[in-house]
Image (cartoon, rainbow, N blue to C red; front, side):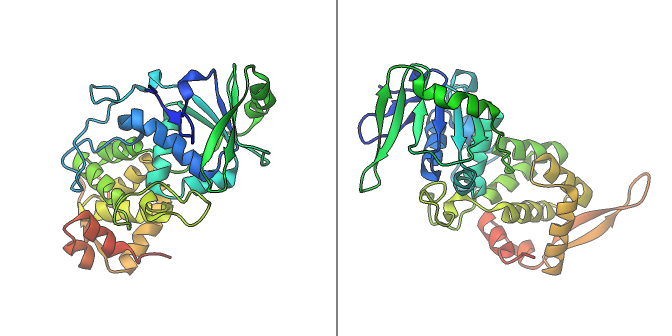
Length: 315
């Protein structure tokens, strides 16, 4: 019985823990999503931690965000590591929404996955370990199976040095944990939880996957794109009455963008008549601006209503 992360196959699954220093070469978007899902199944509190404070409002369970605390998850240091050598377009398709990208970001943060950019497509997608290797073969129905191609390190040796010299992929989307910590530190835990609730809202009726596996349009269940993510986060901060300067710093700490980026987001929400500001006297120095929601944003009572209020905000 496979107990660790494994890649699915039309025959038997391939357990990543059974390979020595494996390199996954030229996976498509669907396979990249399968890799993340394989880790999420055994380490959910690492890959996609639930809210650390309060009820999610969407059926999520309360969780302290730590992995391996009796919740059935595997601690990061007990997970097999995987080197992923992928084309940039495949990575971008697989991470085309906050939810999908933040899951991968968690694996990168924990050094469980080492993601590097492959310059040219390969004849076959391969999974190469120190003792054996596999090639992915897909049938006419698109279903794939891993075929074992050898009992030595020949396949891995073909890619190891090239992988070592390749550039690491810089994922611009933060993990859920980083988002939570950024807002909890600068604001408080209730604001951090509210931001994650807003980012979890999907246009899809239910979550059916991460992103389009064939390179097509992003699935709504993959989550908001980077611009939508910034607008949602700032709108939540305004609803919570956070100081503008504090909110912009929180967004920066959370890995969502620079303070100047959120000056632009503030302008967009203001032009849409969804926020306003009021001067907040300070013991020393000039007054600061406290944010407040207006119109549909002020009337919103749930995360879904909050997102509906700002869905048409854009440059």
